[in-house]
Image (cartoon, rainbow over all chains, first blue to last red; front, side, top):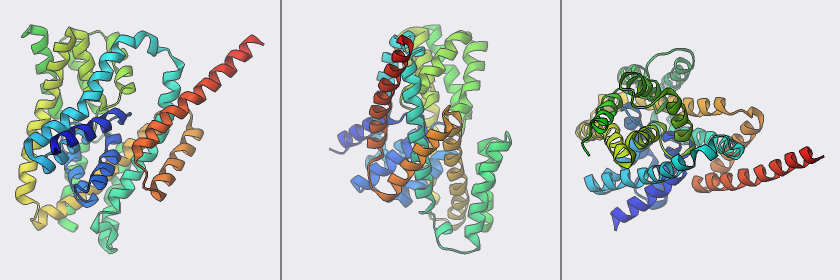
Length: 178
Length: 188
């Protein structure tokens, strides 16, 4: 049954999404390709929308994928699947906190996981970029696309501009030139 | 159940949730202002502990923080109210976005705008990777691991979950080695 499948798959993703919402993106991408639910192009659109909305990009994308697969119930089931591991592990961790806080092992493992996740996140950025027609069909538009990408990175790193503002400006540039 | 604390949790998160963009970390200063300073539901010290835990557990950091704050304030029921408060605005906004998307996604202008937005969102994703890289204390070894992982993902079709799970096991084993070596040093 599709609901069970959605729940289980997003539950598994929920268990491994260390480091926040962005970690979920490559995992969701793997899921949709494995199950043949949609193409990475479609997922890239969903992720663009998820990224411009408030809230966690990964959870928004998961709910959206669930909706595309099985309507409102599908969306709800996916969200529950994704959130349950967080809830369960937090209840557990909250009890263990005093043991964990100063535990060197936690820090050690988290640093290792972070290194792996950086690789995952960069991989998903590369993969999503290659589904963008504007970038891949080489023309002057590819440079505009790359320009927007680089400007986003620079302004996030060196200014305190609000991400929503960046997305708005990017949308206007896209509508005008792409 | 409809205790004032629970309603406070719900309202606070309901207010914060729709104004935070670009991932969990932007939400944290808002949570501190609302929950610690204004409503005084938890102390600054508790908030620091909660943030540590929220980052250790899997899942989105802001949502994990909301669940933990709820747990701390009034147990499971509290976490239910804060989770509901943080998710409800998201769900409503997402529903509107899905509706608008299904109406307008064939429009040429909307498509073009989305090419620009796509570029910005990929920038946001890369920036998330950058901040995570920056937060790692061991830059050299972590960079090597990241590059290796990227290489594996580009070449093979491995499910990234196995890389994360494998990473947990390997770092735990490495820690055992590292730990026993330290202990031996202390004995000598």
